[in-house]
Image 1: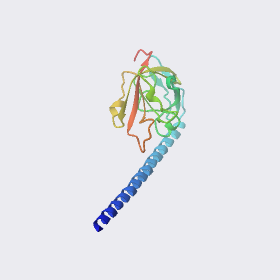
Image 2: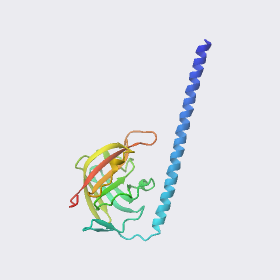
Image 3: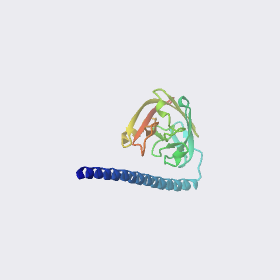
Image 4: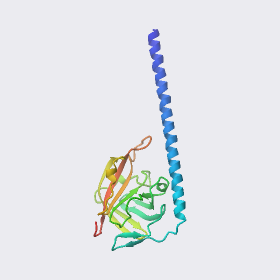
Length: 211
């Protein structure tokens, strides 16, 4: 009898320990995650302030060289992403930090700009009003980017789900204009904590002699 009581007490203590350990881990993760977001926001704010101190001239597109002059400053809205199929009409900002993506679509600074012969990478949250329905796009879906310096059309070629560590899925090409749009995955399912997968849509430039 004493042995059974001991086993029950031991099992209860273990269960309680696991419960409090889980709470501790979850709390630590949330605090750590908020701290990362805080410092990212701080760095972003400093970068935007510095760029605000520099005169921002109107961007221009050279149709011969396929290059942008006077590129948009960091944190500036320079285009609008339009996808009628899913009623999307979102501003695009140069930069893809958490702060920037609170307001619209972020443009990865290491990628090309619309109209240039190279890969363009756009990211947005999967919340309603952002990339919440991006997985409804199919092969052939039309995408328009209306930039300050011109309008550019794209057509969806493919889409897939990858792990966030799969950098090959975001490889930048320098000989063809390819649009990559991505968001966290799963999109519409409740997930506790950080999502480690990405939903990616690939679209080719249409109506362009370099595509």
